[in-house]
Amino acid sequence: MPYKGSSQAILDVVAGHVDMMFDNIPTAAQQVKAGKVKALAVTSLERAALLPDVPTMASVIPGFEATSWHGLFAPPGTPPAIVEKLSKEVQAIIAEPVMKAKLEAMGVNPVGNSSAEFKAFIDTETLKWADVIKAANVPLQ
Image 1 (cartoon, one colour):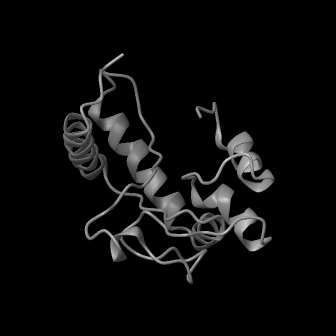
Image 2 (image 1 turned 30 degrees about the vertical axis):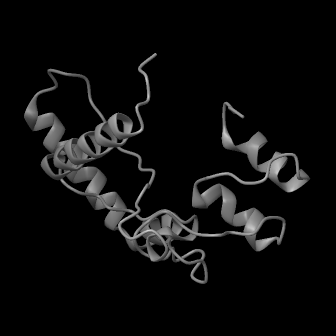
Image 3 (image 1 turned 90 degrees about the horizontal axis):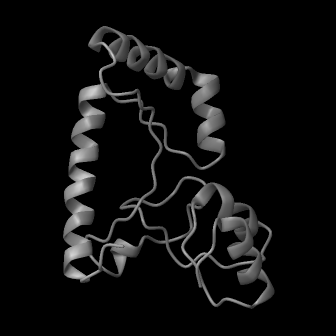
């Protein structure tokens, strides 16, 4: 069943209208900790700090990894010096102990990589998911 966001989907799981779902840890962990849903596995390669007792999917399906991530983007043509300045400022903010602790308390794994490292990550993710889409024979719409 398609949903526009996870809030209604998780409510439907709690109510028993839907058997299961994949959700992001920051939103699902609250329901798990309240005992309203049972976490079966996390889709990262490592266990999640916010849910340390929950196994990984990779422990059952070796190599399984499907994580969500957020990034900061600028319009095409933004001068490289501006991109680099923004990147360094964001890295500094994420490295601040108070900010890092706040993000980790929400179940977020702050990375704060350089713009070049982020581009390489996006390239890798694009290839990975293109292969999954092709293997599953998912039609483009």
